[in-house]
Image (cartoon, rainbow, N blue to C red; front, side, top):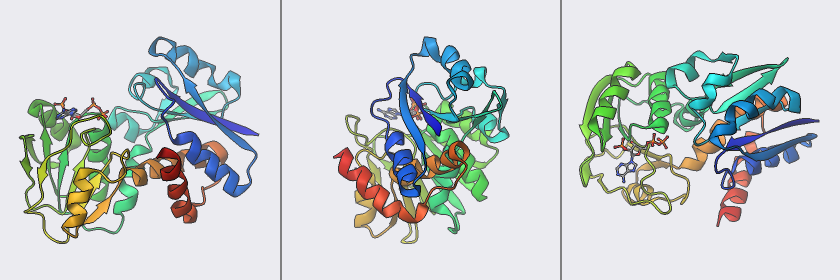
Length: 269
Ligand code: ATR
């Protein structure tokens, strides 16, 4: 039996066990996926113990995605570029770090022609989003952030052309092909994200990385304008898929995404 899990602090809210267990059950695989609440001061010990515990790997969530990098034997170039690891794979006693958030972000955008994008936020999540936009071959990106200096830094590090801008009280989003909210604004318990989508073309896509609630104010506004929307659950399931394949050696049954989403939304409510 192969076993994996998720390490975070706190970790009780993590949906990863439900996603991985759904796939294990759907495939009839003899595997397990658990939650591990690991305090920051115990991270090094926990990561070093993974091979001894016989785990195939772990997902890594807040607040460990950056700190975990100091305790690995190998880090993928993409994870290094983003400065964050969300998946650790154990192979022959070695621990390899990956970042599957990038693939998770990009998945729902495959086939879209994105020339110009706007990103709100310049934190850890925005770094994965920028790496994803780079992978998609986006020509220009506008980064809006409360602290514009962080947006400047992120833009410079991304290697993309564009502009760093201050996040105003109510941003008038310029005419872009894709708008991404990469902040926690709009999440349960957080302030709303106030934006004016009036200038977006009818062909634009609006993507929110927030998944609780699933239908954020931003996505509601976009849907009311008839724009294509992508919610944060798509990214969450998308980042879990390559990790599942690494841990259990089989691709997850993505054709059952609709059923998985119904299960996640039902249990989340
Ligand atoms: P994460 O890893 O989830 O991206 P983070 O690195 O702390 O978390 O980044 C949080 C992002 O949300 C940042 O862009 C932050 O803006 P600042 O760089 O100015 O801090 C943004 N953010 C969080 N709370 C916000 C708020 N109340 N108003 C505007 N932006 C906010």
